[in-house]
Structures are given as structure tokens and as C-alpha cells.
Image (cartoon, rainbow, N blue to C red; front, side, top):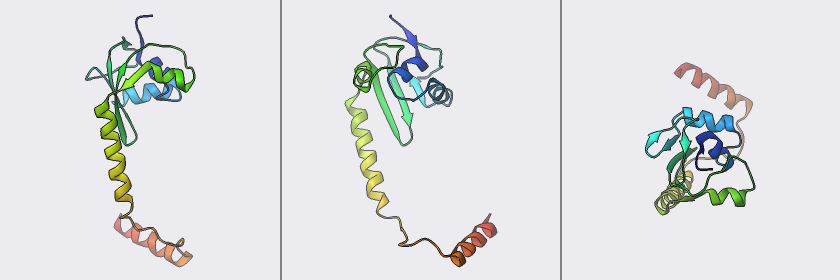
Length: 127
């Protein structure tokens, strides 16, 4: 096998749980193949570069093998290699998010019924 569909490979490499979710991500512009926005039926080859955005993270991976079958996580990890720059950027972004989460105020208890009503009135007025 020298080529495979983009959505099948993303599913087989375990980036997405279903092919439908992989297709949604591709159509939503979350996946770029060799610097170009991909299509689900686009044929991939070994050596292609993918940029995949999932939630807060963006990964840049190089395709090292092709597969159309979903297997275990150990075998799926052999289908690609993530670039060192991508790993470093993800770790820096995660550290930044973690440090900023300490700045948010978290109340000790849930709001009372009266406080919930006041919050709701405040939100209704400001919409």
C-alpha cells in the first residue's frame, strides 16, 4: 500500500475515535496536509507532513507508515513521528495554561439559591 485516504489514516493512527469525527475535523480546517487544508478523500503518502489541531493543542507529525486498519495504541504510534518543535510548543502551551489557571478565582462553596437568582438577573440584564 503506497497511499491511503486522509480520514482513514487519522482514524487508524488514533487521532480521532471515529472516521466521522476525523472527517468533521478535516472539513472544519483542523487538519492541514503539507501546508494545505486537507480533504477527507485526499490520498496520503509516507513522508507527508500533517498539522492537526485538537482542542488547545496543535501537533505537527510526519507520516512514517500507512494503515487503513485501526490497531492498538502501540502500533498506531509507529505510523507517525511528532516533530521536536511541535512537542516543545505543546509543552510550553500546557505550562502556560497551568500557570494561568492559578489566577482564576474558585469559590469554596456553590452559590445559594438567592445568589443564583442574583447571578441570573445580572446575566439577563447584560445580554
